[in-house]
Image (cartoon, rainbow over all chains, first blue to last red; front, side, top):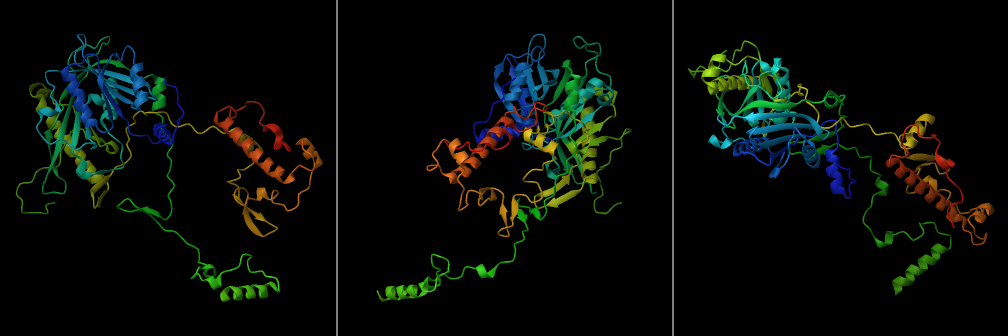
Length: 324
Length: 219
């Protein structure tokens, strides 16, 4: 664990404040990194997912000697340093070729880890599809196809992972024009019989496809939707899993009590984002109104209260100065 | 049903599925629990997937356009999304409520309401002048003692300060006392912030020192 540093200046203080636990959290950021050996295939896959997830991402380019299932503390360290709670780690070895590891953290400690093998035969990168890619930062639509997403406990966990990983920031409204692409996660009914290490059941297979939306006029109110695949096309098979500890999971799933935001009266925001407010000024006291300044109207040093006789002296003085 | 009779061919926008889809519009997500067709899954995987995707996308778009309230602004048409319903783990724990300071505990025990939040707030009514004056700060009433035109010389205090009665300036004393009080309070605040003072049940709740120590200021 990192020691907590006291901020030395206002800027770093603001940064730390942004990272503090909040009731309504910041959108989760994702860290992309590779192991000491990573095949070109997984690196491309890593880059493609990175470009889908931009701008809530941080990408490392150097090699990292990390084995998440043996020791995930380096990833926890990176998570804390960069304030990223999602990690995607690419590696390749003889035992586990074309390996993609998804890791989630809670409070910068490992929550769960899922390891997948990427099918090299069916993989197609973003660049394989020659079409206009969606604008950066667009919120994707997600689609989970297949009955096992609900019936199988393992796949339920995977659904939570993929949704968490790909959903993008939570927004309260979305531009209808901005609904540009959909990511589909499908799983077959009877998974092919491949054994997971140390596990009896067959490993679930997941097909990830991303499509661009084309809306056509249908002559009705609703548009007709046609899809065009944009990539990446990935077929994943689950390898190893580290499930979350019950205690940590419970803590992570805690919901804050709904806080009703206090409505500020008389303050509105217009279309340009300018703040408009109605204020009430009191009645102006016209007696204190500053009119034109003239020498003759000036008050003396001691406010007005003059002793009898002094006044005469003053008049004399004024006369004197005028003569001069 | 048909509004425009000009177009002969109409593209279908409805999809019928054996199991209706579930939606989480807060996250723009659709859950299609219909199993993928096993025959076409084996024979032509891509067609099988893209058909399912198209149907899902159509239903999701239909759902967004029909159930959410659409607002058209100069920037475009916006769909107001509901709150997400799928429970997902948080990134960090819920923020903890701030621990009460030693003073706050003491005040609660004694039923003392804060200076700022009690009925009058910062201002107090000055009977002598008939105006509202601030309790502290610029022209604060806590400086009334310092601004007296006549100040009594307290021999005791003067001797405590280690000065001659002649040399001793009683005017400065009251100001010094106030400044010392402020400094003491700052020290306690620091202590509280460091977490030493705020531990619940550590020692007695009595404020240490019993208030202001008199005649401590000048040396």
